[in-house]
Image (cartoon, rainbow, N blue to C red; front, top):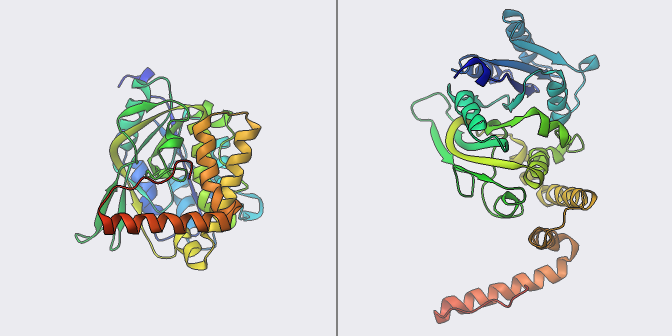
Length: 313
């Protein structure tokens, strides 16, 4: 890859109390075979040893690694911190790495090649290897989860909305498997800081859906990131606390507002939004339909006949 085909990639790691994993994540950037990168470490108010770890790396390689924190070492949330790091970065391309995840050595090289080979794409997303405890041992389990649609092709605006979670059933990309050009990222406002606290569960989906709605996206079958599965994760806590439906509704209503404000009119999108919001807007009607659908399913199983569910339901 020649020099003029090697755009600077700004890697953003935002972290909060990740002393157990942060060094491994940083090392996975340092060992990339693609060398034209900078690493922005954004400390979101850590109180453990991760602050010292990040500062040590920044001091050891000041031309490549930058340490940032907020005024008075405040905790501002993941989206705010990512935007803060992006604002301080200089790269034409932005790549996100979660502070407990790890990249394989060719991740940036392969994704930059895909971006250059697909000049209309604003973003490239790849599969992720779900990485189960005990990590870094021969018995560690890796489960590759492909993005839930066709792979190795370009998608037009709106196409991925119809295929991927949470408006459809296809597995969504993980943040650590994404790379995006700086210009469209900033054009669409980066990450949404209002997705904080428990609503942080959907901060990546808010970002992704703005891109899905407006830009071309390339979906790759490659898998060069390890997505660490761990106890105490946000998704597990929210599910355990019974807050999942509350958080999901918050995202859906944010997305509905975004679609209206940006005058995005498309029948299939409207249908998917109505379907997703129905359990929250019309809970009794939804329960009745769910019950009737269950009856149809049981009858079909007993009779062995194909029974058509009424249209429009």
